[in-house]
Length: 531
Image (cartoon, rainbow, N blue to C red):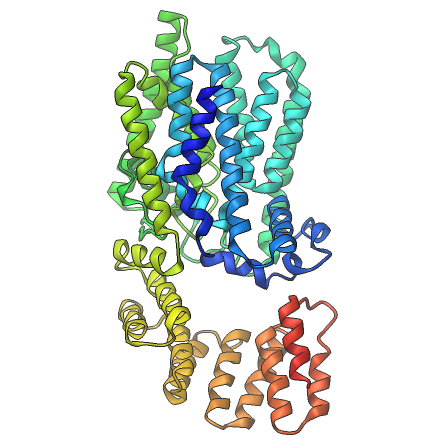
């Protein structure tokens, strides 16, 4: 039993700094989600328009247990990874010899690529989905196919990117059963159930995307068309493999270009990938026939199968994300384990210690919002979003200052007409007390989206700061007509009404439409505005 204990202990040490880390980026959206913060959220997360309901159920439980203390959230993420490491070792030991299993499990447990899903609370969906896939794989090996199908269903409810796992199991069984398809007689029904669940998950995902603004997935992401996304993913996959070999370049928000159909490098990347896959298939049949053994090349093919949901034709707003490697790493780790089988044990031990040290160092980068975004700005100097996020982090830590303004001005130089940049500059000037400069910037943002409720609300706040009560009230009213549930517009309208002595108007505004949902803090703020 020493092997899994050492693996879990190593993973615990490598990622221990995440336990004292802050929230990051999309983590904060959890606390503006009324379902996560409401007492009835435990069942509301399963509404049809919601994705990843099991993951959000864990967020709801975290909030009920510890409110907005990040320690509990990080502890759950780390625990899920440790459980996945233990299961990975158990499964690897069943499908291969001890040394290969140990090397593969150590790579999965300790590689710095795993730092993002462990440290980023919002990436818990990736961890949880992989954990349920491992449970499904274990039951599949132990001749419990229907329970495996149930665990696969849970994986889909955690995150839909597990959708290719039944195909991975089919390929695995072709290897494990020595090319004998007779096993299908006993497993065709549970396997069909898995593929049926995968189809239902896909339908649900695209329905949720169609009714959710800014979902970041789907076929209506402006210039990110399915063809261009697929073409770009050829180079993305090589980038992933490069990070596996040289993790020093890890970057939370990589500046990766969306490639054109005429880009030669994109076609070359796919040609090389196709050649690698073809050579792997040929090698598999060659070595199977020659040695009667299971060559490692299937695990490389399994990596491509598990990566396909996020690196194929379904466009995602972020072209590349390190956390998407978590589930595919299960198969790729086995391929590497086979390739390193003849490596001397002292060299393997040294490699494991290096991986542990690199992961610990990367986990330190995730300690605070400022440390994370400083690292990202340094590695993506030509990308706008990291500069905006670092400016926000600095403002939260020490208020508006010259460094934050300089970052926003650098973002403006990179994207002169970008509405997000104008909004950040406007909010920055508003907090700094320069309402006129804020109004000019927020006008730019409003010009890009004249009916956007948040843009109208921000613009109204600048007008109010300048004492233009009438136009500010009009901007808030337009925002509420555009989105009656917008909290900032409703809250600002109530405060303005009270400020000008219109108490009745304030009471009227407090009665939001029945479909509106607010967090406890938002509801308390609206109530406080009436007093």
